[in-house]
Length: 463
Ligand SMILES: [Zn+2]
Image 1 (cartoon, rainbow, N blue to C red):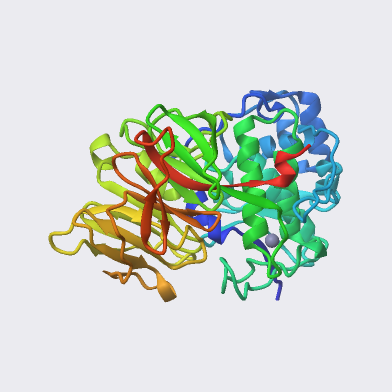
Image 2: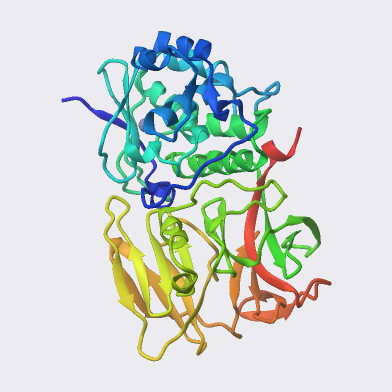
């Protein structure tokens, strides 16, 4: 029997993929997304992929079809240019897959077949010892998935032609998921290709939109952190990102409380983490939820998650109903005014609703243990001050009073650099040590509307 080698984006799939809504991805400065591909280019592509011959007799213009998305991804591989590359001092980037992606790809794949259905979380696959065909799942070809993502996926799949099957993760964020891990990044298997390609794009691409580069940087770290049995060494620093009512982002050192302004936000709102990614749910319910970047990198229109696509399709009145959301590695929960909606199984679309306890009004999710994708419970505060545990332990939804106690009614609790911080609804920030809160007294105190831990990585920060 043939073994399937797949890109299992399980941990991320819960959030990335959706067919519920077609957000347009625009990457205006990238050659790969010019409106049309020249006839000459199309003929080069058709030379390696005869399936495109019928489109190679003239210029090919993008039309958002599945074929169009394939061609735009191929063009992304062919045309993205990079500055001179140097390896990272940690294990994030070696450059061993950095020479021509196109040559690498056509050396291993000669046919891309679009298949009509795939299991949840699977976006592309090849058969081990089964020829040079790559199968692309519908999820990979929607506008929820950019040409940048697909270029990385194509490279990942091409690597499987050389072997390198995945294993079931025995620990970590993807524990128990079949085909969701490689042993060590130094083996250079397909997840190493994923990490390398995203890191390369994030650090060295010369004509990719800054927001898309920021997205690629975070994506490389997510795979590095979540898809290997042997943890990868990445030099990083964790700070507390603060948003003020003046829509300014500030970054604060959690130990010294020194801070500086890093950028501006488009709108006020609540930031939900999806691993290293940040998703902004704006207070203005006429606006859509989207990825947010703190250093004025701009926006990407790619939908950040299936749940967010669903949210964005709602009316402002319906959107008001969502109180908060947590995105774990293999589960998520949306807290609505009247119930909590759990997705506990990363391999199925099943949701479980549990009603709010009688008389309880949900306030917000808090993270006294820190935001960690590996955890299966999260704390919900009620407006009455009580705290509940919400979780998907053993893939079973639960909603019960918590043993966690807080000394005051915080709107947010986050951990950054192992220090716990609490933000009150009046915009004041506190440091919490052993359950005792003490004011930090920043000059921006009183105007703070959101806090979230944010990591930065030496490889991206240094030249
Ligand atoms: Zn794979």
